[in-house]
Length: 92
Image 1 (tube, rainbow, N blue to C red):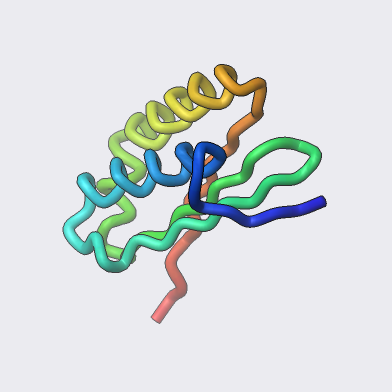
Image 2: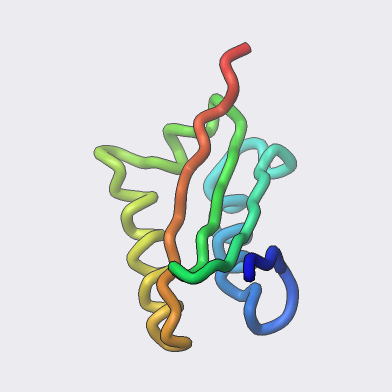
């Protein structure tokens, strides 16, 4: 079964990502986050404004990698596998 949720104890990983990403970017209103749960674990997709991509990814991907490590630790607490994907902004 595939579920999408963003509330309660199960959505704390999504809430965490949303909080951190909104602090990093210049356009927090453009941040869109979706969460999907399936047999492979939790899958979080993040979309930000085109001009904020560099801030989210960081130098050599260090910022987004650090966020993924923190999510893995959060997921391990609940025996979940948490993956994060940054969605490329649409070309205008």
